[in-house]
Image (cartoon, rainbow, N blue to C red; front, side):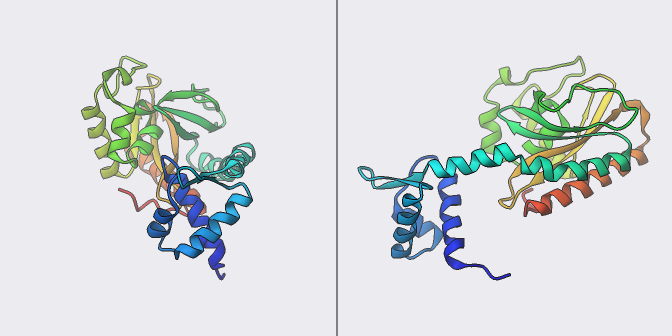
Length: 258
């Protein structure tokens, strides 16, 4: 399939502006994207007219406009990622026989957007809509392990950020959390045992987007004493297969971003 150059350049500008902390000058956009200055100004003028970009004339800078916000709001309303993930999660549950979850990161919490419960399995605290501390969950650790070090440090500035849920306990300092995240990257998956609910464990991996950013975490939860080592290995294979499928659909790669 051929790519339309002008369309690709427009999308590159919008993605670039979305990554900035504040509006930016056209010269910087042109330089960083490798676009001719005349082309940059023509495209910015069109985007301004359509409301996707706003021009701040006093500052000579450009930022995202209301139409860009409407696009993001439309994505939230339609929840395409949740729809895209529902059937693969159901297949994963059928394969492993245990409940699976899909979460996204909100601050220091993970927000459960899908719970696919296995038949005959007990209810858990991870219904869709529930929020739990990311550093205590396998899915949260899977996401945190793929974030830049500075971002993790900003999320956990001091010991007050490390809340606990059970007597099993979890990381209580940034140093301890970093050690767990190194383990996640080394093993290729995250684990949690009794830190959310005593007697239950979880295994998880991230789902990456086309920017190699962890957009979600995929986990399977099971009674800790119910599985042998080979059973856990089978679950990990199933999670990795499902996460790879969802990552491909998002244009990403699980093998990158370590």
